[in-house]
Amino acid sequence: MASSLSTKPFSADALSAFASLNSDLGSLSPAYLRLSLRPRLPKRLHIQAAGSTYGNHFRVTTYGESHGGGVGCVIDGCPPRLPLSEADMQVDLDRRRPGQSRITTPRKETDTCKIFSGVSEGITTGTPIHVSVPNTDQRGHDYSEMAVAYRPSHADATYDMKYGVRSVQGGGRSSARETIGRVASGAVAKKILKEFSGTEILAYVSQVHKIVLPEDLIDHDTLTLDQIESNIVRCPDPEYAEKMISAIDAVRVRGDSVGGVVTCIVRNCPRGLGSPVFDKLEAELAKAAMSLPATKGFQFGSGFAGTFLTGSEHNDEFYIDEHGNTRTRTNRSGGIQGGISNGEIINMRIAFKPTSTIGAVTPVVSHAA
Image (cartoon, rainbow, N blue to C red; front, side, top):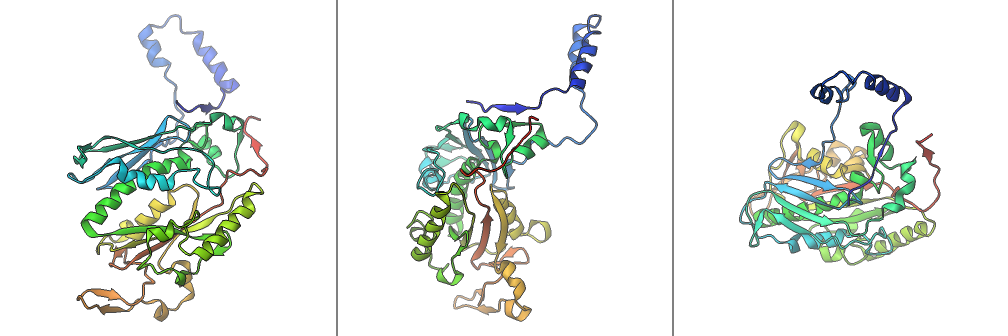
């Protein structure tokens, strides 16, 4: 089911100009008419709706809108002969799925994925992999007021400013449902990294509103997915998990929301990833993370806290371990030095603003006036 579109009405000047043109059409040939009726674009820069593809060797394009027919991705660059099935992706899609608990969005979706190409008899062929997930809980009528008013802190106004047209059913491409394509392709990327280099990627909630999990409570060398999945807020420390859930509940009953921070770690990352200057590894990670909906900040290693240290306090001293590998005794660099991975655990933190869609009344400004 296609999403509805909101367009701006013709101005009086535009209608007058069209009427004047129409009065002179009788003497013109049909072929000439077909050419002449093409709209003349103003002499200004037109920026197309690009930006849905990320990556170079492993390239991912996501597609779909929140209340359209479905969402998904196309993965180009996956190596051939990799065992892959829908089940490999479904594990992470089930973790992302809405409506799992009282502290998430109430939307009900199964988020069941299907692979349409790039896999034959359970093995990747090296050709583009198309993964699709249908939208089954489409509630476009819930957004009828969006046709006449912009929602505070959403992308409604800026999409109109840029394109002059937008989806009025949900957030369109700015909706968090766009991340389904990232999750599906991320599951494939994780499988490749795990198989070829033993790389593990874990993420957990380290802050909700004013409840901040102390960094020294979590051992990143031994952290497991089971610890993270042990509670609905996905904080690996049970005591702080309860505090975070209480903080969410306290504002949720008032129809309000809070933001937080997600910490992501990468273990056994190959050395030498990233390139100097514009292709630094932390720059690539920041771009990927900051393109997620609702993100407001990115840090890695010591982050902004490192500015409070002196050089002698911040430096990571090198040593040779028992296997003859060059290591660092501390990891304030966050596993990346000079834009290149050094083999230590990559540690990054992404800040998310409070959810803009809330039940509490917020003043809105009509764009129809």
